[in-house]
Image (cartoon, rainbow, N blue to C red; front, side, top):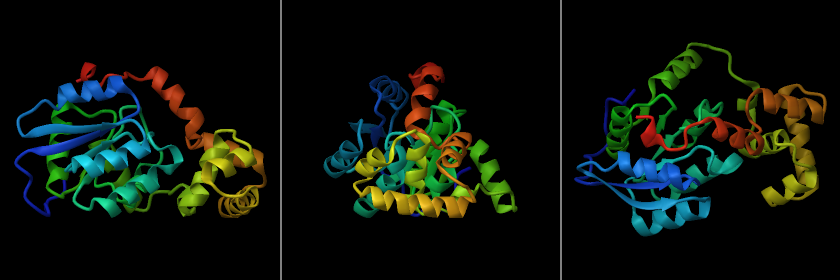
Length: 239
């Protein structure tokens, strides 16, 4: 579902940065993207590499795996938009459903292509994003329309970004100290976020938090490996 009003002309050659921790996925994408008017100028397997490659390669479009940054994916997108305003972030989900797609789009990504994409759709999405327009896969567009029409929104959308991160880490089964270390805060601060999560989600304790996170697919550290075992890892083999 492309946006009808591009913000600027597409570059003559669209420079692409591929961000996925799996080499086989990046190699598959490079085969797909060997097209006139497109050039892969960098690859990244971590958050730090995304930021460094963006600085040196100056891409027009970042193709980003939504699971690369774990619960920190939202802050990575915000940082990209702050540092490289003309680089469009196109989230490419080759795994399956992402329960946080709408939050990702609200953070600053201008495109989201879900698992049922075709080669043609991917190339069109890249061209749209390179022009400054937006693109959302039809399957996700249906969800967006339902939400805008008053469909029920999950309670965790009311959480702040940090509260959301704590919820995801709880869902991964991590203890307080490990969550605090991962987020660079004190265990007492994690406890404060826990209290806010309990209040906003109307839950009673840790077991309820973990159950909620798992039921909504938010325990990313636990969920991503399971998805990847079941999913094709080379996108070029599916298109």
